Each structure stands twice: as structure tokens, then as C-alpha cells.
Length: 241
Ligand code: BTN
Image 1 (cartoon, helix red, strand yellow):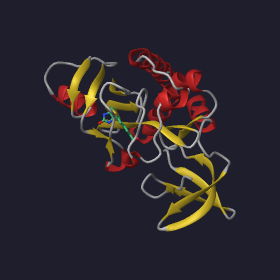
Image 2 (cartoon, rainbow, N blue to C red):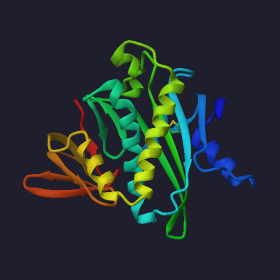
Image 3 (cartoon, rainbow, N blue to C red):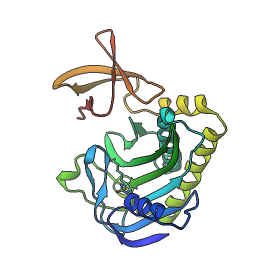
């Protein structure tokens, strides 16, 4: 379903889930103009109307326990990555936990909101925002880029949307079939700054470190001065050039 205008496609999906009509798994809600998009860490997500992909997919991974939630993040990140890689090539990476990066710039991101039932996931709202045909970004957007800025041409939003949905589905089916190690390994191999020295900040301290792995539950493992530190999203920041 495409909406002309909505605050946030994630909010919209949440609302229709709480209404009485059943919402089928795989429902995709796309917005032409999402005027109050939400990002990670309580950030806002800005996207010029009509030029970018802002959408949410409903999944019901009842086979995943709450402790394995990060496997869904891995699967969706890989789906988005593999849909965009044929267009953009090698500089494409996944910046932990789930940003899509081209060289040192952010092309998009996702906000996955899981609704738990007991120790399992009942509904997963997979919100994805990818910059496609936007030419300019305000300074507020930091280091954002778009497919258009990289390749100097416009792309059809619906085509890219359908590529992303089919690749996300393929990875979701890997998870469902229990191919967890495959998903974990391929996600790790696509990580930005994996086994490379980079500058990080944690607890107000800047340090040089190297990403070594991601724990099963999704924490980042960074080695610095021969010691490994384990961080959650709020505890570590990448200091990009
Ligand atoms: C991030 O990088 O901080 C995550 C951005 C996620 C944005 C998408 S756009 C569609 C969906 N609806 C929202 O309100 N947010 C997500």
C-alpha cells in the first residue's frame, strides 16, 4: 500500500495492527511523504517527499526467540545490502548495527520494532529508509548520501523497493529454515570497519580500535590495545572522518 503522506510508516503499521482487522504477514506500507520519520537513538529521519524510499514491512518471526532478535536485524540488513550491491558495487557496507553505508557515507538505515509475546517475537515492524533520488542534504543530515549522488542518475523507486522486498524475503527464509550461521557469517563479512583500525568514542573517551566480531545477541566486539571491549548501541560511537 502506498500512502501519499503519513507521519511514520512504522507508526501506521502499529496502528493498523491494533485495529481489529487482521494484517497479513508481508504487508508493505510505503510513504511518498513521511513527515515525522523516526530513526535510531530517538533521532528523526528526514527524506525529501517523492524522492526516497521510506517504507515498513510486517513480519511475524514467531520462530525467533526474543534473545535472537538480532538475527532479524542481520537478515534484513543483508537483504537490503544484496538488493543495492548490484547497483552500487564494492564500497557498499553494513555499518553496525544496521546502517547502509557507501564508502564513508550513509545511504540509509532501518528501525526494527519488535512486539514480543512472552519470550517470542509476535510482530516485527521493519522500517527502512533509503536515500535514492535526493540531490542535496542539509548539514543536519551529517554524512548522508543517495544513489543519485553516487551514480548521477535517477532510479525508479518501485523497482528498488521490489528488489529490496524480494532479497529481504530470501534472507528471512534462510532464518526460518534455521540457516542462522550462514546469516551471521555473511552479515559479519559485510561490516564496515571490520578488521580495520578506526576511531571510536565510548564513555567520553576517544580510542583507536578494530571491530573483531558481533556477539550472537548483537553487541559489537572491538579490540583495542590487545583487549576486547563489548558495546551496545548507546555505549559506542564511530568517529567518521
Ligand atoms: C536510522 O538510520 O536511524 C533508521 C532510519 C529508519 C527510517 C525508516 S523510514 C520508514 C520507517 N518509518 C520510520 O519512521 N522510520 C523508518
